[in-house]
Image (cartoon, rainbow over all chains, first blue to last red):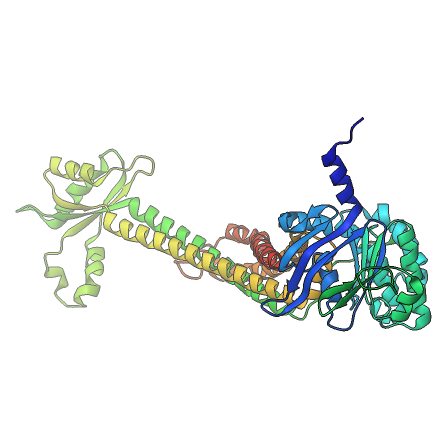
Length: 242
Length: 296
């Protein structure tokens, strides 16, 4: 039986969760913060994005999270060219992406449980169908005893874990985390990292932007290194730049 | 303190319940609704007054009788009244007493001593049949048939003036009503913009979590519709109180003849909270969707 070339191509592209083809980005009329990026993230992969402050890590994550648009080049997410996608289709695509923002963006007027359940509410699920899953997830990230607390009463690590819980509660296909260990101690950083590893083991593609070179070194995971908006390394940590 | 039970959890409102601007917005919407309700009451009452006046004027006619030579004015008036009383479409025709005729012209000429010596024409008041009133031509024909020299005034000049005034009052009322509605919509649109700006964090999180523009806009729409309904209710209740005071103070004829307020008029302000909510919902949705589109 012969293979259908179109179906094969679709299958191939579907295995690429993210594809960047010579992507550049600038804010307004400012200088380019990302220049000519070319890379792919296969389904189920775990990558770090490293680079000094201002190298473009957050901008890269914002592009993948559909929070910004490229000024040049082509981005494909889950096999869809986002430049050709009508605006009405973008929210559905965003629901397949989990994001842990650098400043967490927890909603202060909502409880821990309400914050964690937010993506499921947005997806239109019935509360009775998901509240058990949310409680289970919060217990898994160590917030089982804080479900009715308000975010401002949480410690830094607890906030970080709540943001992660909210990012993964919808079982996204890719998880983006921007400096998730920036404001926690070393022990908490390791706990959070183990969470990401566990999520990755469950099939979620993970991309973490971090300054924490020690964490990156110990993980042995592939690295996308940015320098002045250019991608200078895309092999495993310690390898020579590609 | 009881432990949190996920089974009893109910989703909290995604927008914070209270906002410092809410009180001011509620007050403005209440005032606008109060003014809109008063306008509606005023238009209804003035329309009723106009219809009453038209009914009164249209139900009567006045005939000015001039005596033939050798005939006394009183005899001419009596002959005219008799001629008209038998005309189809006339319920009653009655010659006005001379004293009343003098009373009618005294304000124009002053209280002069020899008023009775003046050749004042006699008047005949004609009450027309309500179902099939006679027109001016028929009354004139009846007078001519009896050789009575008289002019018929069917008050059409006055009726035309009252009708024009009534339609002008209705038009002005509708204009004021529309202006108030537009002002309410503008206030809500402004508040929505301010609300979106103040709650940019919420909007951003919802947006990046996959909420559609319609989902986010609906949050603001429901919030402002509810607030406008409360403001509308407050304004309507205040206007109803004013209407009730006018009705109680003036009785069925109103404080002035131009504003005869009826209890039934108060029903006209019942839809105010719903109308305010609809205007606010539309303004909030339109504004929010426009702003959210800019985020894409």
